[in-house]
Length: 117
Image (tube, rainbow, N blue to C red; front, top):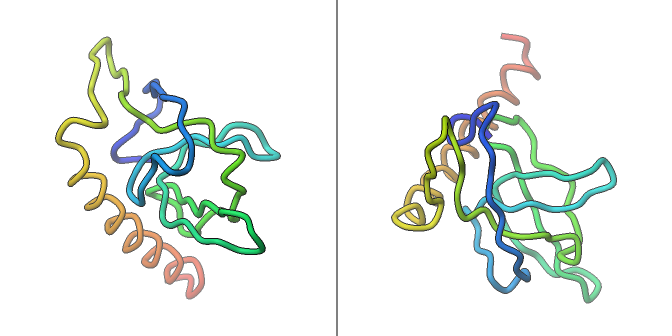
């Protein structure tokens, strides 16, 4: 989740349902591999289920879609070096910008890895 979240940061999660999250939000889900905190890219509906599509900001690819039932909550704050930083107040616009940055970075990394440039 770099550059917003760094190694050693702690994320405070508020329990919520999929109705309370929007693309750009940092969310935590329980997936088969354990807990995953990534940015929500989009929500789709398939076969009566709501699917959450997530991606780490510095990752080249989206994560596999996960059922909204696996949503544990939304990131509301982070702790870095003893400082408490809100992920809500004033962060809505930044989260949206980071969503775009994440998509561009992912595309560039995909091209680099695919073409080996």
